[in-house]
Image (cartoon, rainbow over all chains, first blue to last red):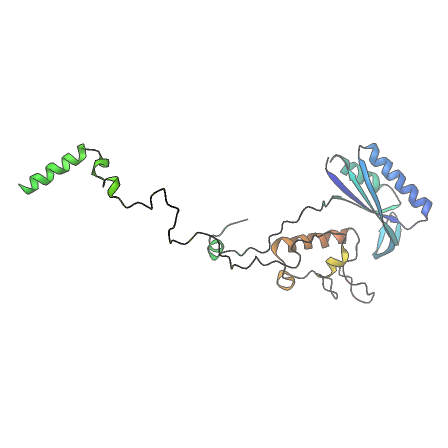
Length: 121
Length: 124
């Protein structure tokens, strides 16, 4: 199954409420057949700009990162589900950036003949 | 008489296989006989051993992530928040593209890419 990363920004709330939101989010994920690998808290900080969401203007938010493995059909249904949750300010599903072994060989110089042969990418 | 002889020889050549017209094996110039080791004075084919290793850009080998805001801020103007072009960053094709995509993704995920001073413009 492909790996996704769900980046969430939650409303700045007290600990028990944040825990409740995270719990129901992860339960919803597991209901749709996702395997949650890891949950990271990137801290609560002030947002770089004010976000208006669900009839509220937010200046602070808690950043969370959920590492999961899920079938691709989960994306649209989860985005819908999280869109209806008033405590979630922003949700972003990203393919997990698996740190692959960088085989960067450096800048290989292009010979002038290759540049002249008008190759279209 | 000579012309007729030439013509006759040409016809004869066509009838006989070409291999018989070749110089016999023992008179052809061969390499050293198989018993002796190869001691030719021709140069050995190899790549230039004095060639410099390929030039690497600053991020060659470094994993670029949209969460790594400090790394991304280095490629963004502290005044306008605009992403620097390739002629300024000096990155290779691949890495410049990766950085641009990561910065735009970080903006979506509400990550502040840029210096944290409040009086400077945020850039988006």
